[in-house]
Length: 182
Image (cartoon, rainbow, N blue to C red):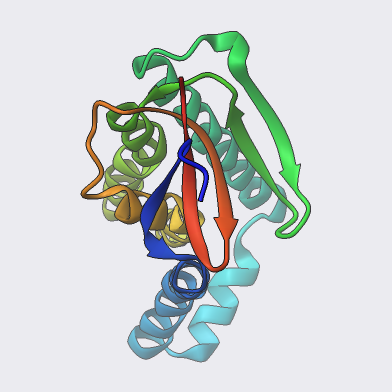
């Protein structure tokens, strides 16, 4: 194996399963709790009463904020603003934030976790203080959107924080690797 790669503490298949559970689990849990609490008819009437444009606007702003928080985390980790690019992952058809600069593993952990650490409490407070179910739904969607980030963070646990790496990951024979910066 290439000495410029460090094996993460997670298998690619396990990573995929965990991400799938996170993507499906929180929104499904939200729907089930709402239906058990208020009934299916109340859920449907509340859901269709949401202004679709308002919902889509909030969702797009949430998504953009998530990606911008990755940039902020990377900048705190020492990456240059010019090293960030946004692209589309063809496999999942989702927008992603790429950083072509190297950073410490501790910085990569911050880059990975910052959206979850900021958005989760913020959306929970907004949901608690609002009569609308919109913010609870946004919390569920935000949490599911952090599935890959959280799983990557788990894979980074146990690797020395001082090592400088690039944010790109490589999968080889079912194992996940991060490239060491020279």
